[in-house]
Image (tube, rainbow, N blue to C red; front, side):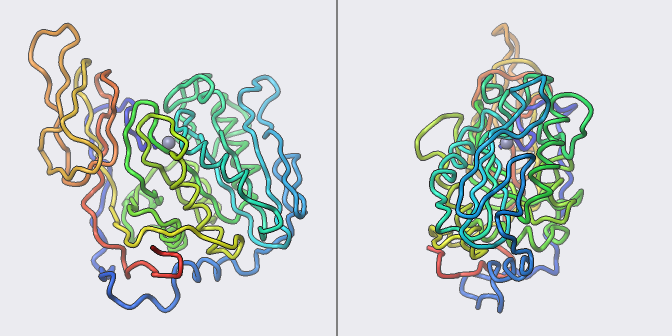
Length: 388
Ligand SMILES: [Zn+2]
């Protein structure tokens, strides 16, 4: 996942963060589950949106009952690399429409693997409703092995939503995804992972506006995060992200990232694939759900530690470590091998959820992402039949 990590920012910063709302209940796992669990609440919210797959269109691609349709999303005829592949799995009976997008950041290959696996696994005869699958949203970045940004214009797609029909390549790409995928879906899942130069933790992101407070996060997105079932959820604010655009349209939306360390392995996308299957099962669209994490930790926002100089980044921490404000995270040694290394210290208390694993550090480049200290999931997680 990029979460602002390893891109250039003006100065070391602490992103807007609020403490967990005092009115939220912090109940242990032993507490009785809420009367209506997250899955039931999600289903209730989507009651009445059931559609036959025949009525679903993504651009010129029309879904079919009991059919898989494949094509490309038209963006502009002049740049073929901008047109993401799309598969639409039409179920055998009506149901909601869920969009699952991978590769918004083209080097986050675990997200791409997860969506590709779903294309193969979702059998139309076992599915209700429609699933729109975009394995690689940022084709040019994927093909160019370019972390974070689209090589055609240097823009971050996840900072370009909702986009516009006129403008640069990334602006147009965001617009096409907004117009033809996000508007069509009832639920949106945006998948990320460790970039080519990152180690990251496995987690779900919920968009909550500038406060980054769980109390400002839409209840539907929190339910969706709970159902997705990864152990860690960060409530944060990325105003021009894909999920922020979906949320502005009133759609429940989350982003999730796999614990990839800038590498490729056959199982790298499994956690994301399984989370998506849990959502589909919770919505009554798919017959089975893999076990979810037994407990969820909630983080209200994050902070980013950046480099102050160009040089060689030598981290002293790793993903999963707890850190305190001011704690040394590593050093950036001068490029010419002389002089004093520059210390990089934690801007806030929390848990390390992302670390740049490339030696290269540029001044003002983010190096470590720290999720604010965790609390138990409010109300306790819905134990449900599918929780391990
Ligand atoms: Zn990402």
